[in-house]
Each structure stands twice: as structure tokens, then as C-alpha cells.
Image 1: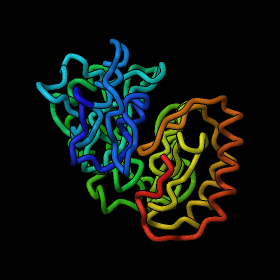
Image 2: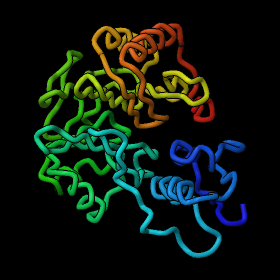
Image 3: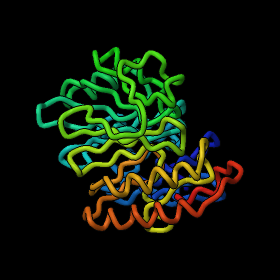
Amino acid sequence: MDDWYVDDRCFNCDVARQLAPDLIGEVDGRSEVLRPPRDEAETRRLHAAVFACPTRSIRPVSGRPDQGLDPFPMKLDSGVLLCGHNSQHTAGANSYLLLRPSGTVMMIDTPRWSRGLADRYAESGPVTDVLLTHRDHAAHGRHYADHFGARLWIHEGDLDAAPDADRVIRGLEPLEIGEGVTAHPLPGHTQGSVLYLADDRYCFSGDSFYWSRTTGDLEVADSVTWYSIEELGTSLARAAERLKFEWVLPGHGDRRRLPADDMSRRLSALAGRTRLLRPRPVDFTAVRW
């Protein structure tokens, strides 16, 4: 479009399209501005996409994006904020702030690192823990944990990605890591993938599963499952019997809120579908965003 464009650094992470799906679409394997915003609400949605994009690829033809329209951290629900400012070093993954009744905060995965951003996130409350879902999202974890004076968590299966972690989750059994917050090991995408469940409401699924706008359902990214798709099927079958949540909040792929019973049915069905899958070559273009 004449007013805004996406430059050639875009690597099709889908982040911008999650935030402004009516303004930014996928064209030939990358994001493209479909039309300029028509009103203030659309301008704000576009700027949310701009300030989340890990490559800062969404740009006005002249000038710079309005820094005053940076919405992050952005409220998704009463207990969760989206960090925005996604990082190329985590393949553009989303990260979140989980607000606790005590007034403290947990960070799930990490945005790009800067002291200014860290100070902005800390305005939501003292950050006590940085929870890594798996190795691909470990970048910046130590920086944020040290800045906040927080504990850095990772599973032993991916410990080599954060060998200086303060807390190591071991084995396959759920582990309570804070009041109302449980870590559920979910090997599959990576050996040390973990899902974090909070208050039987919020499911931070990392890259284990996500909400697909294409299929209108929970899906796994089997074409970029690094460790074992068979193991992921087993993990999901085990988790489906234990998990109750309303929100799926993934690292990659879209977010969605549904009634807990509906989510449970969908997760069980996903486990069944996943157990039928077999390994295939890595293909980023096959992900059904």
C-alpha cells in the first residue's frame, strides 16, 4: 500500500497478522499490508503489530511509527499481559506477563532485551520468576532474570540452552512452582518443552500447540517439531487428562479463549490426531497459522 509496507526482512512469523489480521495478511509466504488503517482503532491495531514485529519490518513510507502508540505490555485478560517487542533470537515468539494475586508477576518466555523494556514490564509488579517453555525461547532469559532479581526456570531436557538456570524442572510429573501455577513437562517439540498452567485458566503452551486461524482449532506445528512428533502425541494424551484451561497462550501461533469444557474436548481431539502423525522433514511453510 502507499502509506505502509513490509520490508524484505520479514520471515513469516505470523505475529503481526495475529494483532491486525484485517490489515496485514500472508501473501506468497510473507506478511503484506493489505490496506492502510481507516480510523483510530485500526491505527492502534496496526501499531501493535509494528511494535511486536521481531524484525521491525512494518514501516510507513515516510517518517517513523508513532512511539506513543506502542501498546505494550498489552492487556489480554485480567491476569495476563502480552509483552510485544518480539525477538529474532526467539524466532519471533510471543511472551507474556502473568499477574499473581499477591501483586507479583511471572514472565513466560522473553521479548527482546533492553533495560527500558524491562523497566516498563516491571511497572506491572515485581517479577519473581522467568519461566522458559523450551530451548528455542531461552534467549534473553538470564538478562531479564538478573535485571528483575528473579528465578530463571527451564526443564532439564533443554538445560544446555540455559545452563545457569536457577530452577530446573525434572522428569515428566507436574510441578507446582508457585501458588496456582504448575509446570507440566511436555516433551515433543523439544526434549525439554514445558507447558505452564495458571489458575486452571491460562495455558502457556510454548510451541507444543497453538490456535490456528486456518483450521479454527488447536493444532500442533508438526513440520517444525524438532525432537519427536510421536513423543508429542504421547505428551498431549497425558496432558489432556490433567489440564483444565480457558486460554491457550502459545509462543508461536494465535491465542484463543473458549469455555474450559470446549478446550478440554479440543485438546483430547488434538492428542488423538497427533498420535497418528509421523516424522517429516522440517518445513516452515507448512505451518497452518
